[in-house]
Length: 418
Ligand SMILES: Cc1ncc(COP(=O)(O)O)c(C=O)c1O
Image 1 (cartoon, protein in one colour):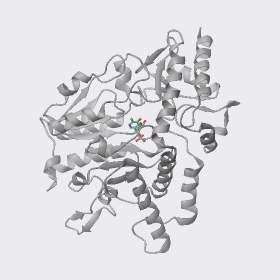
Image 2 (cartoon, rainbow, N blue to C red; image 1 turned 60 degrees about the vertical axis):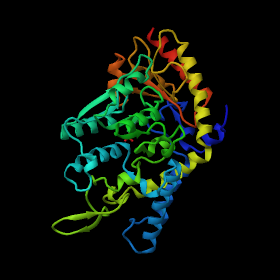
Image 3 (spheres, helix red, strand yellow; image 1 turned 30 degrees about the horizontal axis):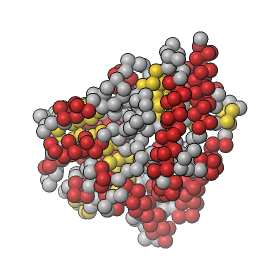
Image 4 (cartoon, helix red, strand yellow; image 1 turned 45 degrees about the vertical axis):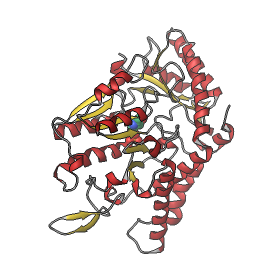
């Protein structure tokens, strides 16, 4: 394999030594949630065992140790994204919470002095794509319902890509928000986000990138991307569940109204009203996910230590082998780009005559963990006329032998159903 020492990496992930149904575990569900290296497990346990206290409140030693660890995770994430400032990093529960934070902050702008530029209403448009995860559709539908704005979307080609010629038609000067996925969780497609961001800028719309699937696999540089907001989720990046990140340009965050109100997000409170803390704290009401953020910092260090270019090369090779193997199975239909160009290591497929859940269950009996369903991107299934797909997704710890196991496993499923 190119680039990375997979056998050494595998030893870092204790769960990969497990057996399932008496077979070695072949974990091909990282797009759903990635496994955790021992370093991440240790970081969270060690924080609870030796340093735990609430952050930003206590003056005692543990309080300052906890605050330092939490804030140092913020530095780590800022460097990971090449963010110009640590104050642009907001910790959230996951990316779903980050996108909802934005959607609610936009509607709170309606009554918030100083936030006029975020106001959205009838006649304004919010643009997404037809391949979004539900967490990048539903918050915008709700925002549209609250404000009278209209939701529009960029449609898909037969091959699982955006209709590029539609980008300029859908993103017009009525667009106020353009929120698109970097890499599709359902199709594996890597989208031309730079081009979309440029178009959003040209028409004066705010641009938001859902980097849930790209953060673990692709180089991610918020300054190079040029978007206004970028969000990702910790558990897909080999980090803990319960923590996500919203990055936003500081000049926007400083005027953006809060979403959740509560402790630590205020400057001052009287019975008559409140004023709000500067970013990022304005957007982190209540006790945050302290240990999870600390362990996310460790996960980021782990991924950075391996290197995004090496990860990308490794996963590209796995994807090429998996596409070739799956394409060699008669009648199997790949839902998404069939060739290994501008696509990530996530492959959805349908075996005619076999329900995707049955495929996944029979694979599980062989020790192979894949996901079946609509992958929280139901419009994608509607677009391609399938009720669901089976999805195999690869990460840093997967091997070519595991790709072979998948292909052999799917062949076996076909035999059982023949
Ligand atoms: C592209 C994409 N966006 C958003 C999400 C939502 O992630 P979370 O459930 O961690 O908020 C996912 C999870 O599958 C995803 O793949």
